[in-house]
Amino acid sequence: MHYTTVNLAANGSQEIINLYTKVFSASEGPDAGVAIGRLVADLIDTTGDTDILGFIAVLEEKIVGCIFFTRLTLTSERTAFILSPVAVATDQQGKGIGQELIRFGLEHLKALPVELVFTYGDPAFYSKVGFQQISEDVVKAPLTLTQPEGWLAQSLRNGMIDMHGESSQCVEALNKQEYW
Ligand SMILES: CC(C)(COP(=O)(O)OP(=O)(O)OC[C@H]1O[C@@H](n2cnc3c(N)ncnc32)[C@H](O)[C@@H]1OP(=O)(O)O)[C@@H](O)C(=O)NCCC(=O)NCCS
Picture 1: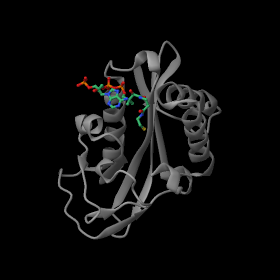
Picture 2: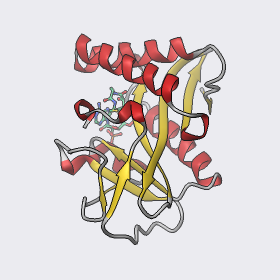
Picture 3: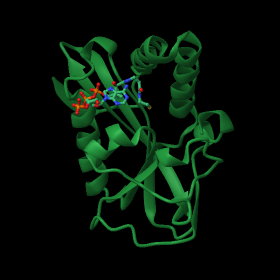
């Protein structure tokens, strides 16, 4: 297994889109699979170069895991990204690949440097890679959260999230209420 950055300028995106479609079809049904595949295609097509980073896990020349981070613009102008979506091939899940890939991505962001990383998902999984629940009184999510307990963040600088009353804006592809 090796972990590497996605070169979004190259023509390899279809394999990534297919991975997301398959993984989410298996875990949440075919409609969810198609929707996530479309979201990923949209993220790749419509996000500016400096606002998106992708990382993959590769096993025997096949992509078995992928994560994307896109810019989250805060009112304070601190540099922040949001991790979404995340997929590990169904037959490779539960082996630590998801966690390793996220740690690999976070190390890259830290070096950029990015100060804060957010995500929206299962706290039981994302707490394993440093995310903590965050109140919307601290940073308001870009859209209305249907599951506020899934609003998560971490500081890559000193571990402290010392702010209050911020709002945030996501990239265009994520700016749809159905994802929140
Ligand atoms: C969620 C997912 C990315 C985790 O990747 P992974 O490589 O399987 O996870 P890891 O092996 O690194 O970590 C396993 C841990 O995560 C938890 N976990 C695994 N799959 C999970 C899931 N679908 N939801 C929540 N937690 C999950 C397990 O409890 C496990 O904890 P343990 O080691 O203490 O038992 C992967 O299972 C996946 O792609 N699932 C389907 C798509 C999805 O739900 N994506 C996340 C939303 S964007």
